Amino acid sequence: MAIVALILAAGGCGPSASPVAVRCAVIGGMIDTGLWPEVAARFRQATGIGVQVVAAGPKHEISGPFRRGEADLITMHASDEIINLVADGVGEQPQPWARNDLLLVGPALDPAGVRGMADAVAALGRIIASRSRILVHRSLGASEVLHDLLAAGTLELDPERVVSMPVEHHRTLLERAAAEGAYTLVGRIPYRNGKIPDGGLAVMVEGDPRLRRPYVVVVRPAASEPQRHRAAARLAAFLRSPETQAWLAEFGRGHLDDRPLFFPVAVPEGAHGASR
Image 1 (cartoon, rainbow, N blue to C red):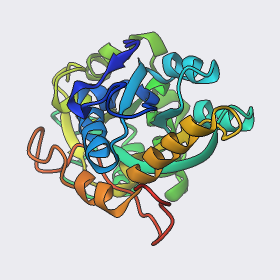
Image 2 (cartoon, rainbow, N blue to C red):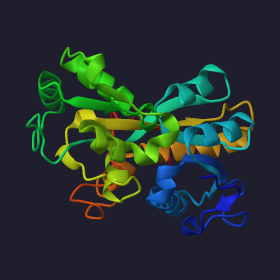
Image 3 (cartoon, helix red, strand yellow):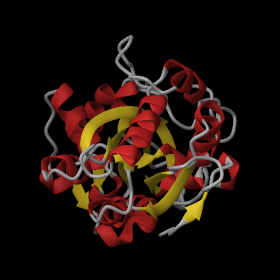
């Protein structure tokens, strides 16, 4: 999905609201869930500065506009994609500000006997020990989480029990896992809202903080356009402010389940900078 030159009406932003609106490139899930429009509205109310979305969608679609100087701020999952923007000198000040989470799902019969476990590492160890199949799909970011879980438990996958999934087939991820009788990791939001058909797979483990993935915010360097940089830096600081983090901990609670849609990060006192 790509959104070009979309003004977030919820933020009350536009040329009349502020001399400089912050032009943003935003990962699509934050638009789809309504998180970013709410953030824009709160920032506009707190500072009088507007927020303009110039690109939204997958990370590879939003990094280009930022590189070309069409956006002052970008936010997406922590990844090589966003860190390379900083390494290449087109962005600076990478900071985590939110997390989403994944679910460990599997066949309803649960041959490994892990349903209801709270410890994702222990559950993964039991799945491996039972010689159950595990489906890995790299485009969903689950591979990074899986790697961390394996490292935490000093676990190793049996290559003969691993099912690989092509990147372009992510919407059939769970249907493929069901057909293979495999366990897999999937984003909680697309699983709960039906964006990815569940294929009959059931939730096995949820709520373990180790199943969460951080989002990072990066702004363009000050030397590019100082006035725009200042506005973008204020928005980045606002995202990490105690007020926003407390709000984030409740945003969307009850919409999909009894947990918020996204999760706050631990920000050391005074480390969020000035947002007002």
